[in-house]
Image (cartoon, rainbow, N blue to C red; front, side):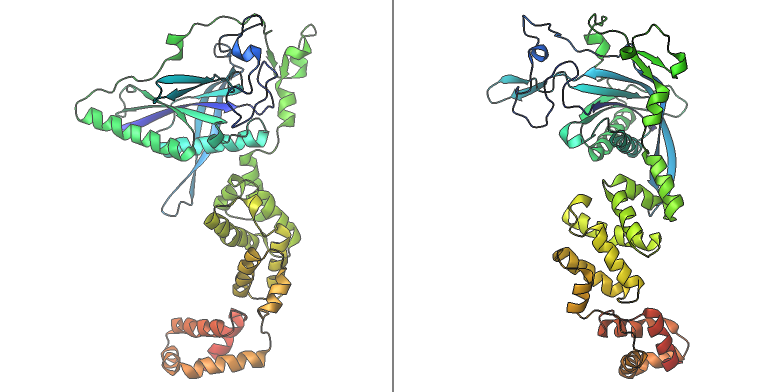
Length: 442
């Protein structure tokens, strides 16, 4: 049996006010502090008293979301997939019920009532939690790039309902269940995979999967909203009739011209411009602020972009992830990292010593790379006589290893190189050290 997954996504429109009232939109505001008379449907106003939605006449239909998924042992194989988008509609968010079990009462918070939402209805084209999570992550990035939704799931700006069923290939789709209001990508993947496994176990034991989906149509009726004029969508300005109110017109060509660089185009540009790996382009685009950080360093350093990406992925992201920090919180600025990389490129400090400098810069951000190199005596040893003396001392301390090397086992030479690096605190050029050691041992 295989799983079948469709998603319904509610994305909060980025706006300072609600859809049809002047009430502000703010996360974690005190309950019922952002509610107008219209939101509360009080008598004496022009109350709505119901949810306004474009469900029957959506603003967009028959779309496609293209996303990528990583597979393979090292998670470096990129597979491109797509999911059909049945429709996108605008609608109002509803209020929130807070259940107090101790007092056996339910409290209502209307702060969210009337907040503008985009609902994206995806067809059941996915088969597991990992695919659904990858699709939602790509959708997040697109919405953030467009500036239409901040898509912060932890703050309820993006909520997902998953419709899940299982069936045998070739058979009709199975009975579906709905997992509602999932507020994180990780939880989405886990919830879907759990539900798929649960349904499989039910069917394999001879049971029946119950349809636990709450059908919106069965609970509510629909009627036209008399206070809202129709919205007309045209492909180009040439298609717009002369007698139509411009305030009621949406022209696709105008919107298309304003669309910024979207995630897929960003990744392609990064790969083609800088020659980096595709999986690195995903990290740069997915981590908020990381692409700008990387490109800033590239512009300020003499190093090849592939060397810069190594510093960004290993040293910078390694430290950020270890401390649970965001790129914007990095104590090392792009300018400071570029300065350090330039010291490596100019031969003033070795790569291994530079990593020590990086860690010191992380601890003491006000210190510059050159200052740390001087204080810790990490400058490159370029004097060949000095290098020869150091290598000679290592060779004399390891006579057995020298004999093994002379017998043809060149791998042992790495041990001697490591000893030289340890003695010099990584202040030597490995290529130069290897050449000297080979002259001494062969």
